[in-house]
Length: 313
Image (cartoon, rainbow, N blue to C red; front, side, top):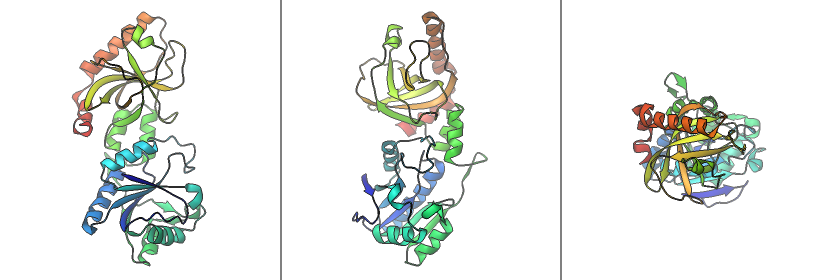
């Protein structure tokens, strides 16, 4: 998928297109419905589908933990059929009027023939423009606009803030339902302190997503290595039993042998098992790891493993 980086009034040579608009952090089931609708319209018009968004480190809702990095966001959008993505420089457009954004940027600069957004989409200086305004402004220059309605799921209105709330309390199973797939955390395997290997449970270490996004604790997880999926245990936190370290993921992969240092892997969190704790002795820690392993193998219900089914194949 092609990625563009836009600053105000740059010419990116975008072909006539359908453009989905939004921040798309998490790319939840509401976003997926919007993108599906945009993909259908693009196919009807025989046009490419693009996404206009902002980088995860932009000042939009500054201080809010991000679910996915730009790389992960682009990866998932590509899987969902998006042809190109535009990461806009927020500082270059934040003082732009709503009318200028709609007609100058979308219609003129990006050659948009149909824009697709959510019911709560805001744009322009001070977020002054709303989805209804966008529809009116674009119609004045012959551009179609599709506004997707609020989506209710399991009796809740779908939102990224709700998913963050689930994750902060360790309810990753519920979060995954609203995300539409298991939460994925990609990264390069780095060296740890070797404690897991010395205890007979070698682990891989990867970086955490945004600080404070996830509840510290042990999770049932899955790890993709190449084209294979392995059951695993993942500890999210600082590993307080030994020398405390920076917040990270430490994953024990069941029934796997091999050296993964320096390689990129994807860890999928599936269900919360218990909170992270400090153990008095190594023996106590080993006993708990055995309990956690048996929980993953025998007590975590099939409903959890169904999450990784076709979605991870």
